[in-house]
Image 1: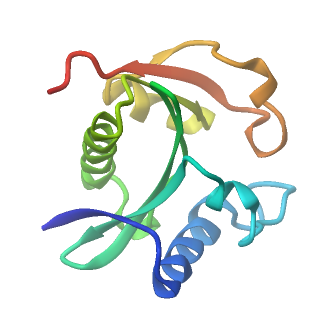
Image 2: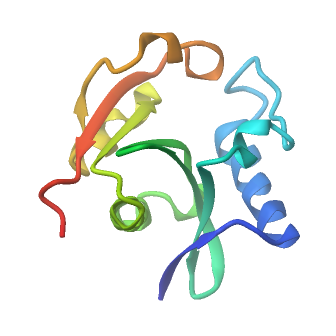
Amino acid sequence: MYELKRVEAAEDWRQLHAIRRAVLFPPHRHRFEYNENHPDDRAEGNAPYLLLLDAEPIGVVRLDKRGSLGVVRLVAIRSERQRQGHGRIMSDLIDLEALRLGITELRVNAAADAVGYYEKTGWSRSSWDPTELTGVAENCVQMAKSLSSIS
């Protein structure tokens, strides 16, 4: 059984950081070091989540609420669990969570190798804020997704 759990407890944070470090910030991927204390994770309106499968953390995502817009960030599924449909489930669950929060459009800075995944889950290429494409997002592709057809 899947669950999208908001990260709150210390153990949740530990699991989130472990998945991010392994999948998003391995030594060979970026020239940036992962910061477990980045203020954006705890900024007002930003909510990190764990994707649980039978109570086991297998994925992470953060949803930043900006009025009726939401920005999906730091999406990752544990390497040994990739290409098994878990990302699609997490996408569906974050869409529902966004709707629950009053968000009607999502945006993302997608890693170039993840664009196909996003296109398969309803996203389209859309330049929404070029100033975002710096730092760890410098080589990303901006995409957007309307939630108006989801109920």
